[in-house]
Amino acid sequence: MSNSIYATLSRQDGLLKELQVVANNIANTNTNGYKTDRAIFAEYIMSTGQDTPSLSMGALAGHNFDLTQGTVKFTGGQFDLAIQGDGFFAIETAGGPRLTRAGSFQLSSEGELVAPDGARVLSNGNAPIQLPPDAEGISIAGDGTISADGQILGQVGIFTANGQLQRDTDTRFTAAGGIAPSETATVLQGAFEASNVSPVLEMARMIEVQRAYEAGQTALEREDQRITQTISTVRNR
Image: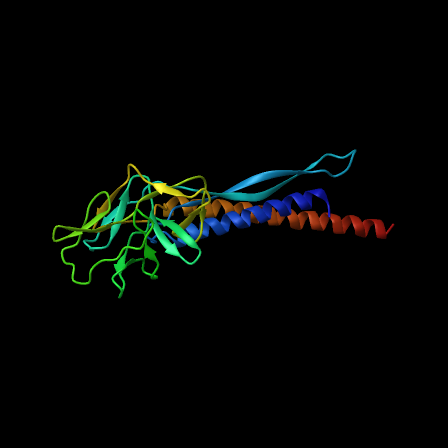
């Protein structure tokens, strides 16, 4: 294949990955705690020979997440929690702790504070939070302290990530550098944080990427026709 085809195919592959990221953002517009994803691309230079120009290729290098706080929606739910400021809840999973801003929690049959899928919410000491079955009038203070009838029952942990975040699921992240307690974030009971996706911006971006992809496809078809015509002309001489 010609260098122009290699370069265009590289661009098409990048646009397809960008389209997948944008489509996932749009799909999670109404997902509590979801953070907008942005694909990051890097340029690679490939040698094509001693006397010919090098070839520039692009590839997906990673993701950047917009951690801007989403709109706080008040529900009145006893275990609906939103974080104000920089920080995450920690969730215990089979693969290790995960960070999330999705704070719609509930009590399990064992009296543990859990996410909707049963993953246990961790305390500030990285332990599951166990609440007495007969506890009534549970309140959760700004620092995550859980109390009922004047008795402190535990504390919801709020953490920050050390180093880069990597997405594990739509609303959960891993932190390669580990986690540390947050010193500034506060907890708001009876509310949750909505997705920070802007549907209008994402739709505009999707249209832009789709048009760029279609233009690249047209360029590939024209290059293929040019090569086919060249081969045909040489054969007929």
